[in-house]
Length: 448
Ligand SMILES: Nc1nc2c(ncn2[C@@H]2O[C@H](COP(=O)(O)OP(=O)(O)O)[C@@H](O)[C@H]2O)c(=O)[nH]1
Ligand SMILES: [Mg+2]
Image 1 (cartoon, rainbow, N blue to C red):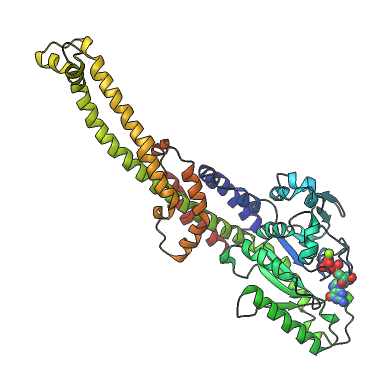
Image 2: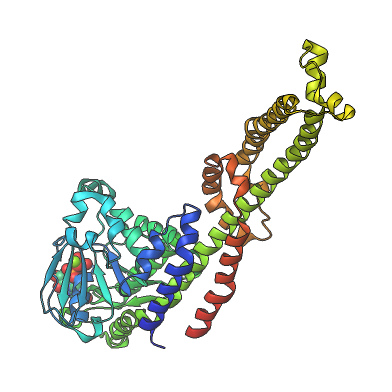
């Protein structure tokens, strides 16, 4: 089956089965929602004039993006091909963030400054028919970064979450500023992705005057990378240059094919789309499962407390039914003949009934108050401060998930009300498990 079809199938399944579950646990569905919409995307980030826009133009087959040595372009631009619309059509950010069919609604929160630096440009290019490339403004140093008027790093994070491939471009001359960018995307991508969604590129290698120069630059880039990734092994770095700009006196023959490899990798990104969606669903649904597990155990505890009080209450109610009249007669000499005495004498009249009924009513009220004002709040207080007691964290994976959802569980608990003892989470858990064990597996099998 084609990727696009699979994505649609998956989308329908998620909307139908998962969305209601997310809603019932007050869980944010917008991340999943966005990733299921629209086309696969590749995000290009890096320093200014590292050659991002030049690469975009190459991929689009037309000079759609302005290029230049200074920070020429300070906008985020989505470039894609669209059969219905011709070359050069430009759509402003305000339209993009309000278009329901596009995955950019969440970006609205970055404000007007950002929206005015966000747009889409249409080109005619068969390769970009089923995908989009996001060209980004160059990363500046952190001092100038503050003048942008919006949170650049947060925008990058959100776009990286949507992207199927993130291309990090460095140029040999300035590799310093990239560290923060890397940290921002690394924190956004699911841990399970590893580095497979990030491509490292050192561009403009033709500007190195000699092989010694190149080796030195490459060495210092690798050192920077290992500092950033915290890993001992060095990721693959694509060394490229734009053929048209080549001004090297060196023989760049050995790297001539690298540009094509990089372009092929970018154009191949749509193949991983469904896999990435599945990874994202996998993580989020496992989180939901844990939330639901916690809520289920809390409910069980609350129900047990409720049942205990109910048992005592029931016994008390029976006693109250028979003995209230007797008690009030002893204390205040009313009624003249209690219900119990009348019963023994075999002459019960409706006149004696108000006392037993009042007794039972009082017992019910007292039991309910005991449960709702004492027992339940005590339970809530205990578990709200230590919700971890509600779940079984059998392995590290679950422990990591728990760290993410614990505040949400605390929040759900703090909002829960005594009536929660009547709601039943078991059914939800079954549905969640079924989605993980059947639906998700079925899709993983399909793309294998
Ligand atoms: N020598 C050389 N110049 C390049 C290369 N790639 C881009 N350029 C030039 O570098 C400048 C900045 O490129 P641009 O694509 O605008 O960088 P961006 O800021 O990352 O989008 C432009 O003048 C390009 O013509 C390259 O591989 N080698
Ligand atoms: Mg540019």
